[in-house]
Amino acid sequence: MNAAHFNTSPASRRKKLILLTLFLALPFFLVSGMLWYAFENPPTTRPVINPRGLAEPADVQDSAQFVPAESLPQGVILIVEDRSGKASDDSPIYLASTMNAWNPADPAMRFTRGADTRWTLALPRPFDGKAVQFRFTRGTRESEEANDDGSLPPPRSLPSVDISKLKPGEPPRIELVVHAWADAKK
Image (cartoon, rainbow, N blue to C red; front, side, top):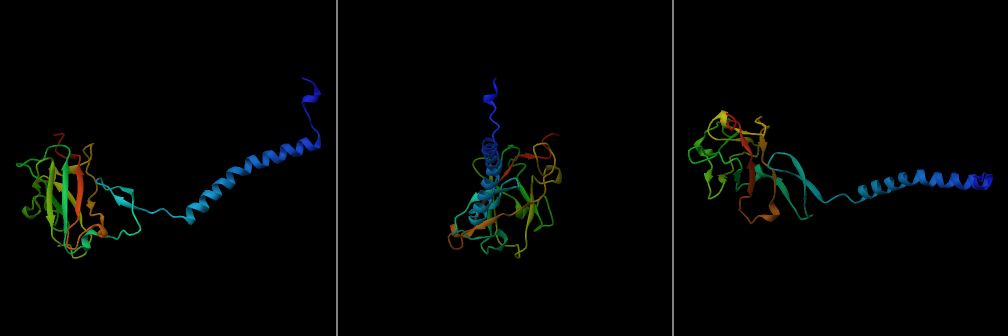
């Protein structure tokens, strides 16, 4: 290579410095613009509790009116899908909760088996507006719902309900899933 390929004139260095400055500053301006846009235009989503008790975003229109399920005078209908298939007429699903002193076999909290792997329990409003925590059992503490690895998950809570989608007096249907039971590996 000859010396003509290495143009080191002041004008050339100035041009390279300007290009380098623009190259380094561009990401800063792009990120700043995206943050400004995000703060000026908040999302129209709210977290919803999924069947495993984890928060997930869900599209919610501005007309949605979310309230705690415990506050509804008409109560709620719980629908549980037993994906393990261990629940049966001889080993039905029960609700052990703060409402019944965590009784794992309370006859008043026994689910009714449907035609498939889904079980249903209509809960009137016995909540007194207090938050309810619960677990699903099959009649004993040894047969509580479990994670896939056999460990016990934390107690569940009733999710918030969009009352704008309910008819007056209609209890919301809350669908939940049990993936495994604590006694499944025994």
